[in-house]
Amino acid sequence: MNARSQFPVETSLFGLPEDTPHEKVLLNADPASGLLSIIAIHSTARGPAFGGCRLWPYSDELSALTDALRLSQGMSFKNALADLPFGGGKAVILHPKGEFDRTALFNAFGRAVESARGSYITAEDVGSTTNDMRAVQKQTAYVSGIPRTGLFGGDPSPKTAWGVFIAIETAMSKHLRKSLNGAVVAVQGLGAVGMALCGYLHEAGAKLIVADINVRRVAEAVHRFSASAVDVDLILSTPADVLAPCALGAAMNSVNVTFVSAAMVVGAANNQLGTVEDGDVLHERGILYLPDFLVNAGGIISVAREYLGQANEHSVMQEVALIGGRVGELMERLQGQPPARVAEAWAREKLRC
Ligand code: NAI
Image 1 (cartoon, rainbow, N blue to C red):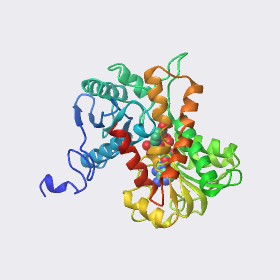
Image 2: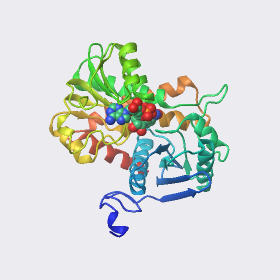
Image 3: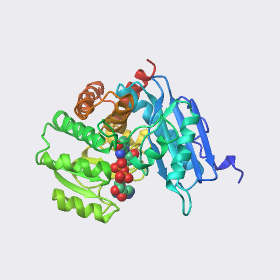
Image 4: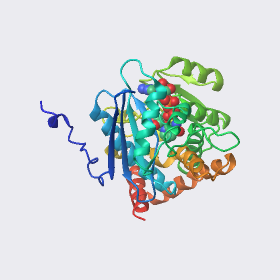
């Protein structure tokens, strides 16, 4: 098999099918630290591309490229719908095989970010931490998500959880005409966002059903929030008012989308749908799906305001809560159409401005 034939039809070096090509894709290699990273800049139409950096053990380079392209396109939509003065970009680092020096790796990644000369700004994502961003900061100023004494900043996950909570609360009220008190919410993934989301939902009186591959996190949610635990293979098909996917991408795909048994799907995970057609299936089945790039913008709002130096805790929480109004606007725009498609068209309108 030659190298070219290994590329699945849905990916090219310049972008994804049926999408505008990416403006720029940077491949960075630093043998000394073991860094192999991809910085994907989808659009700078609204400003410099802003999006986190994922460290992940990809099975191969093409999977990493595909992930970077999908995630950066999602950031264009997310930043546009959140009315941020930034375009969409994302970086992925291929997790080095064997032992490696984490500080050296992120220093090298910082140099890669610097080489984009401000057209890309980075922050944490799955697999990277505030400490990693400190290492990036040693090499470039184009980084955010760093705790700063006396100033607003740091881990964006609690703000992401807050935005998803607001979206769930709004959709419960507008779509199901119910409050969260006594509602059943199934949460898939109890990481930084999922656990914080459980906290908000528990406080609002929701009954939680949870699943995670990490049994310690499941035990913690059961203990702290009186949650019921189910097997990871069963969370999608658990009957609930809301399913909140907060693990990894493509949680709903052509194999399992028909299993979803909740009335609505509202969660934090990026790229929850394998394809937009999976959203059509949810729509045909009468399940309201609120697109990730609309509801999980709390984190990027947090790191963007930190980067611009315009923020405090109160102002950011208020700005994140505006996601509720956008959920309402999306529902008015639907007119019987699948929300994933309507939200994407809405974001593309804003990208042209
Ligand atoms: P995390 O890495 O802290 O948590 C992910 C959790 O999902 C882990 O507890 C992991 O054990 C669990 N998990 C993995 N595979 C699973 C499976 N098959 N079934 C059930 N659980 C599984 O990540 P974090 O930061 O909580 O992010 C969660 C999702 O939200 C990711 O998709 C991320 O891209 C997205 N997101 C996160 C933001 C943030 O501010 N952290 C911002 C916007 C999106």
